[in-house]
Length: 377
Ligand SMILES: C[S@@+](CC[C@H](N)C(=O)[O-])C[C@H]1O[C@@H](n2cnc3c(N)ncnc32)[C@H](O)[C@@H]1O
Image 1 (tube, rainbow, N blue to C red):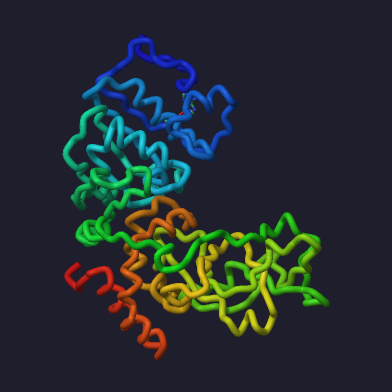
Image 2 (image 1 turned 30 degrees about the horizontal axis):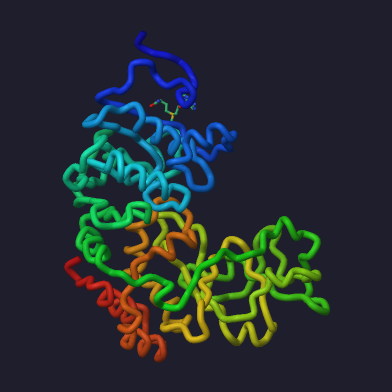
């Protein structure tokens, strides 16, 4: 029989293993029943996604030495929920080639996610994977650009994979692989803003009232990384009336606010601002909404101050680095915590520039130096 129409996750083909397993699997979150969760346990971490299950299934259908060729969203290269899938791929079928489809729109009908075409070789460790950028060209053909290579050798493959998307990023990625510092070393941890507004509709207020606190919505973090307190969008109200037991929703200490959703087509993927100390002083505290990441000090005296951290994250260099490890429109706490950073002891020049409110070009240049990026990169 040439074609069998069935639920492929439940009906593995009879004649496996195969030399070649090709797929353009479905994607989207699914809730699994207990037996299925157990069956795919080795590749799952938290939420299951259909394409992750199909990738796991493909590994089971491919013979040692065989090839798996899959078109999938790019989110698995970095997302937390794919960490066990990344480790499994690394152990059983490391990538042999990864081709990023540069355009999100107009390539696959109705697909808004960034996609990639990858081949994986089952068993054995191949040479580093070749990485390409594939662009649809105007005449209907394809333009293919070699970007560099990728290997999971000598790194923890469950961690987000650092992958250059452009030739210019290839040298940067090589350098990032040997940069050990992370946000925790700078004295910070990341969590998402705790207020999910539609669970607290009755506590939203137009006016402050007796115990009201300002709500900080994502719109307060401007595209150029400034803080402007406002609540102008639909359903947004400026104040929150806390009830007994709402302390977990309240922020009283300084932190850096960073947008949680940005697209690769945007000028910047990382958009941050310090929550101004004066704002906290005026209002006593604030309630931060769920579309914002809060980068909070994990100690009394972080090695890098919140304003320097925000300036650094807003730089072109940090933006490039983030683009090399993210594969979706989410800017997650998990990925931020995995972002390779310069040594916190090397921040003197940047700190001085931030203190004198130097212009963005000067700050960008200082951040580029911290990543060893020169103009030719
Ligand atoms: C991204 S589309 C790809 C369609 C087709 N393979 C192609 O390349 O044009 C994914 C397809 O998988 C099918 N699908 C979803 N869940 C499935 C399952 N459990 N078993 C088999 N096919 C499934 C969907 O109906 C959809 O047609």
